[in-house]
Image 1 (tube, helix red, strand yellow):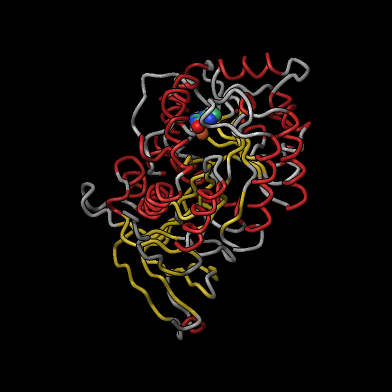
Image 2 (cartoon, helix red, strand yellow):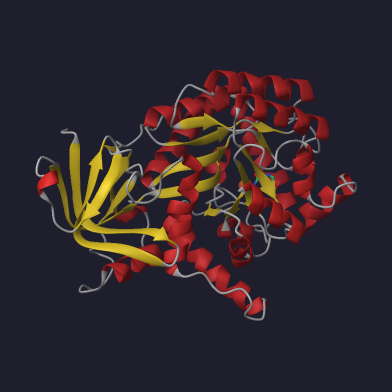
Length: 427
Ligand code: GUN
Ligand code: FE
């Protein structure tokens, strides 16, 4: 490949939430994996570029899945008559226990990585299970694939079944071992500190995790305010703290390093303010909120407060891998929130939802998720020719893809300017 590549296609991306940038038969000029510029016609400067022409296909930034549970892949779609806590007990915990077996872990995790590729999520923030060896396997598979993201060994030392629980000492020792091994192994894949949620972790465990996060400068991911029963349980366990963010903060797990909080349905004003001040990410996982009857995330409230927000599949709480589907469902939910709030919280628009799933989520990983100059060229090529009528504008075509498309229209995936080949599934 020559130093410069000009990727030609029907180019769309969002640099701001309000609107799509569009270039009909435009060229994304990429040098050393990064976007140099996007132009409608090639200039003298780009004469030497190798041209990769995608014709009438859409060329868009790839998706950023900020919340997914890798060891829940195998039972995706099951247990949907349960609420959160019952669903964890009856489905999540027994399945996650199987990841004590490295062979099983390799089989399932190879499928998870394959499906991140398949659905166009080139970067992801991933929960593993509490098992150290299985987490290594997941980290290694993601590194080998060429995709990127954060991967966490889960911590859980209380209110968990006997077959899926660890001591505080073991939990911290295993977490630190992974941190030491992987903190500097790859610039695409980082280990992530991952207390499951407050009911699963004692304060001394979470304090130790905050210490590891700080010493190894690792991101933190966990769940926050996903269901009323969960929030009540947390308050019973910790009446000395006003809300869960205060518990995490006490332990050094609330914005001391990059922090990703899944759900954020019932956060009080103070918690939202601190999230905004510290740049703590909220992740909207609409399918999971619907499935476990959690409720509806007040996305607009968080956006108005200045909280950075992204989108997540939350497999297997959510059953839908495709972030394009998650985008459209986020818009649908925001309309229900608009009604419920007496029209206070405006619904999301389609470009806003796309922005959340690309540039906003991508900002966790550096300059990723847009085609502005200096952004890493993480991109998807979409063949939408079978989705409906012809003669539509580029915005309409992307909107239609977001509402009716999925993995079947994705024909190529790029990360840092490199085409990513299909990851192998281990049988
Ligand atoms: N809260 C604690 N654990 C989980 C989990 O595995 N999935 C979801 N959706 N919420 C959780
Ligand atoms: Fe989750």
